[in-house]
Length: 269
Image 1 (cartoon, one colour):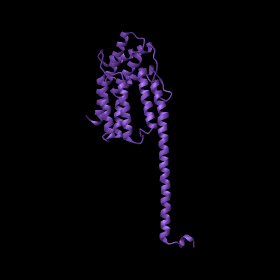
Image 2 (cartoon, one colour; image 1 turned 30 degrees about the vertical axis):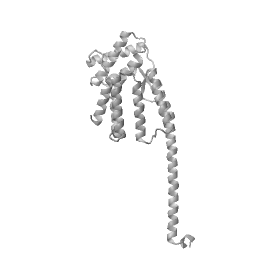
Image 3 (cartoon, rainbow, N blue to C red; image 1 turned 45 degrees about the vertical axis):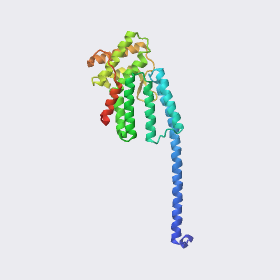
Image 4 (cartoon, helix red, strand yellow; image 1 turned 180 degrees about the vertical axis):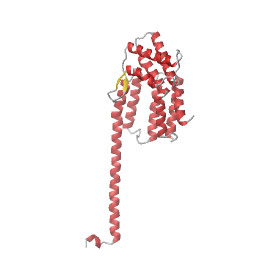
């Protein structure tokens, strides 16, 4: 008979429990160590590779140089805060607060009227506070972003961005720049009113964009456009606005209102 069989049953059970407890503690210790290892690797990935990619996207964008510098500084600070542990990537409230602060700061650098900035910040705070307090779900957050980027707000931002990045600094005459602003905003208005669709604009987008080497199958706007390319694109926008029956007048783009509409559609007023 084995020696273990001569031990009292209670002793054998106790040793079995101790052994299991020890194995469990070792397993938990490995899990904790693994968690912190994975966490450190995720933080390192976000603060380096993702940060570098974001900065590359900013630098390659059609944003004016002063806005590129401002947004790059925001990305740099977020990366530093991640490395220093001031932002926890596994804490919803921490992440939301960081995104809220960065977005608010970014809006402050946009070349927009003060009332528009204030309206946008109000909506950012509304969404961030609701998400942090679990009044807005993950699905609703995704729906809000979808409506923003694929709806009138995104189209208005695109028209405004093209105007700011390519028209103002071009060699066009003052009269041509004024006309360009009118035609771009006519299209933004037509899109907001449902008279112009994305499919109407896609053929024209193809002319001023190039394949994105970092995103197979996608395209990005050319970093630099010649005056001839700008004028040709503006004529295309005029044609689309005319076909849609949009008045030939300067339309004031109300970003704050469009953002509020998108948020209202998802979570109500």
